[in-house]
Structure formats: C-alpha cells, structure tokens
Amino acid sequence: MKLNDAIIRIKNLRLRTYIGINDDEIKNKQDVVINVKIQYDAGQATNSDQMEDALNYKTITKAIIKLVEDNRFFLLEKLTADVLDIAAEHPWVRFAEVEVDKPHALRFSDSVSLCLSCHKG
Image (cartoon, rainbow, N blue to C red):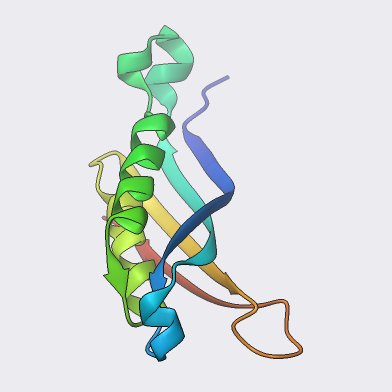
C-alpha cells in the first residue's frame, strides 16, 4: 500500500495579538484562535520514518506564534493571509487552509472568523 497525501491539522491555537481598528483594539491585545490545515505528500516519510522526510509542524507552529504575537493587524484578512503564507511556505505543501477566529468580536456572537486557502501546483 502506498500512502501519499497527508493532512496536518493544527487545532485551536490560542494566541493574543493586536487586531482591529477601534481604539480599545489598538491599545489592548485580544485573543485569536487559529486552525490550520496543510496537505502534503508524505510518501517518503511513511516509508523512511525519518524526521527530515516529514513536514515539521512544530516549526510551522512556532513561526505562526512569532508572527501573531510580534505584530499588529488592523484586518482579520491580513492576519489570516500572513498565517496562510507560513502554512503554505514549504515546497512540499500542496494545499493549505487557515481559519482565524476573533472571539467576542460582535455582541451576541461567540466569534467572527475568516478562512483563506491556497492550492499549489
């Protein structure tokens, strides 16, 4: 049996950042919840059992944390696009999808979220 397509899911990564355009959003960090889906060809990793043949989700997660916590964003679209760039960066990635939730962004709502994805050759 040959296994090729692997999907890595980073679920509910809870971080804090400056996100928004209102005065209180500019002055105070807010919670964001990030979900990432990455599809790549894991055929070599499933055969070799060697880390260098696999996509390192820990490295990807650390880069996302650094991006989110060290920057300021006006728009959820920009934050989500920047996280997607990190998720899709490795040449083995075939597809990536990122959803960023901004809890309590609207009254009477649990959260507002934005989802972006990309397909690579």
